[in-house]
Amino acid sequence: MSKSLFARNPSVLIFLACLALFTLGVTALSEALGTGLISTSFVKTLGKTLCLCLIAIAMDLVWGYTGILSLGHFAFFGLGGYMIGMWLMYERTRDIIVTSMANNDIPPTPQEVTDAIGNQIFGVVGSSDFPVIWAFSHSLTLQLVLVVAVPGLLALVFGWLAFRSRVTGVYLSILTQAMTLALALFLFQNDSGLRGNNGLSGLQNLPGLDAVPQATVSLWFLWASALALGLGYLFAAWVVSGKFGSVLRGIRDDEARVRFLGYSVETYKLFIFTVTAIIAGIAGALYYPQAGIINPAEIAPIASIYLAVWVAIGGRGRLYGAVIGAAFVSLVSTWFTGGQVPSIPLGFYTIDWVDWWLVLLGLSFVLVTLFAPRGIGGLFDYWTNGRPPNRHGQDLGPGAGALQEKEADA
Image (cartoon, rainbow, N blue to C red; front, side, top):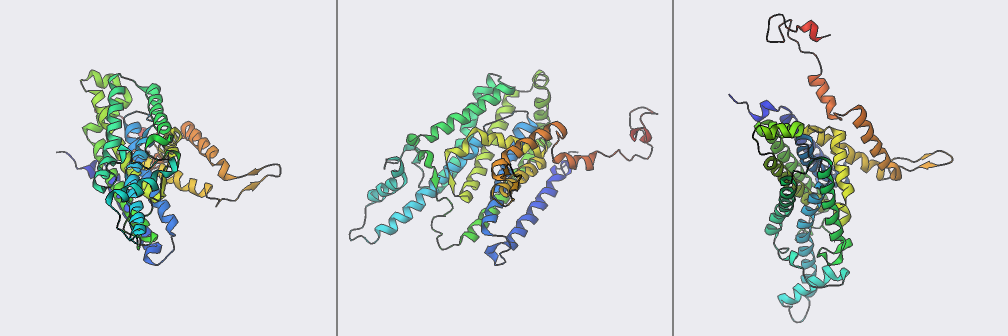
């Protein structure tokens, strides 16, 4: 009789319970409910951290469980942000234009409104015409579809080309990084249709909700991010807990043997690569409205390298390890780079943590790789699995007189 998901992976219930308690606690202490013990800006930081935890789960699925070190998943994250950002910026600009034209003696025509919106959005890059990629920016439903479709389609095409050629290892990592770099360089151009280096801004302002305070909006996004993280964790646990997960681990450990056993390795890789790209796109669509702005620098290859560092520090191959790593590094990074850590004067030199944080992060990655390859999540494994079994002297092997408990303690 097959066991349920929660029986096979009890950490799922523990994680969901902790996530629910965390969300309720932040809600109760937020400015939106009047207590104000947690500022609105920090609520946004926590909401963004939950989104980073979600993309860390995607990275753990593709790297920790399947063995594909993708250095391009933040590109999918950014694309999801751009897709929802187009609707947010269009509708917000439209509200401003319609309001400003309402006092005109002659009501504006729909074409005049559209032209004014285009001039307002693209005037910074010397244009006023809407590019083709903005064709659906007026529709929230269609842009939400694109949040899933654009990252998924890019991952599907890239993965099909790479996996059918059986590119593996460091060569595949280089290819994913090259894809990310090419996308970032394209978006930096003013004629990319996404405002070049200016990016999309003002995303924190939800159209039609001007009367709703930011404290309430930030709480809504926190709830949405927590829900997405919970569902993402549940889905990832379901994927890795069954036979499919066993095949993924087999591909990670010995791809040739799995292929010899008759499994279509390329199909498994393509599926997990595409699905995790979609998860990353959803995470980005929730992240950037809380950040308020997105530009091509967010998609630079270094961001995907940071993502791999988060998962490694948390402990790859463990879903909760990926979450712990992303949350830990994100919050510590906010602490160090926000000027909250006092500088250390050495007389001849002053250590400013805003400048030295990345050095500290890189050093942490090296130390974890050398001395704690299981990461922070490995500490939980030690306490749950590291102690010798308590079998009260029963045989631990198939034959009589096999390894006894006292021998296991040795």
